[in-house]
Image (cartoon, rainbow, N blue to C red; front, side):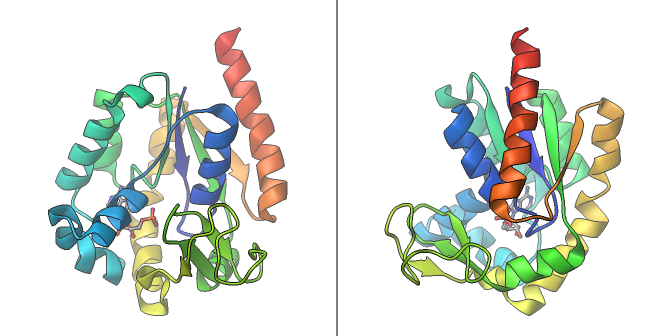
Length: 216
Ligand code: AMP
């Protein structure tokens, strides 16, 4: 099945999509992770997007759509996928609808206050890309990923100035997609305010119902 994980930066898309990928077996495709991987490896794509990403801006639709279209055509995405961080603009949503329409859009709702709290203490793993939080989701050993033992770091775009730009972009360009997906009948809203374990319990139930309704 094809799920889009939707929500503001810090709403929990990455954390929930990683759990859902483990549980349901669909590949977790995060455009942010693809860009960060390219930046880490110093590829031409990484060099192209580095300044935009670090300042909190959005990469162009043309580049992002091409990348996602290519990724969704790979064999592991044939039976379904979990998209995290795409689409972020109406152009991207319309492109996805044309080349590989979603079954459901999971909209994780969280207040501005919660989102800011989460972004300010977020730490990412350099190796597997998982996100942790110094207070809400601490690792057993500070600075070390519980999942793979990789080193944790603070994303450049989690700094205050970039966070402001990201939230503005979310409000002006991405949040209007809620209406777009409501009209398509694919929007499913999940309360993302609570701690990760509680949100996951609810979300897992929602996804199980959607998957079994599809199989029935
Ligand atoms: P994320 O990990 O989803 O928060 O994405 C990190 C950054 O990558 C964003 O702030 C954007 O700069 C860029 N990015 C990720 N996905 C997209 C997208 N769908 N469209 C444009 N830029 C994106």
